[in-house]
Image 1 (cartoon, rainbow, N blue to C red):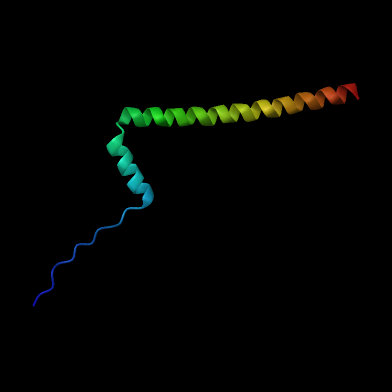
Image 2: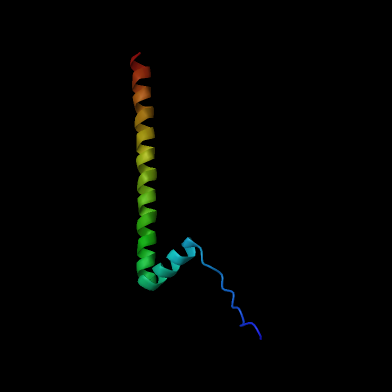
Length: 67
């Protein structure tokens, strides 16, 4: 009696599975729009951090001058 042939297939990682679902659900334009939106969020966060730092420097300069 001969054993049945075994086919080995790699189990995709969670990331690979999510990317596959994303590619099925979203067209390339939607993926690009989502990437652009995320890039914009990161840039807004960077600018907010820069504003906080600039405000801190100005406040320190103001207290140093009046002291």
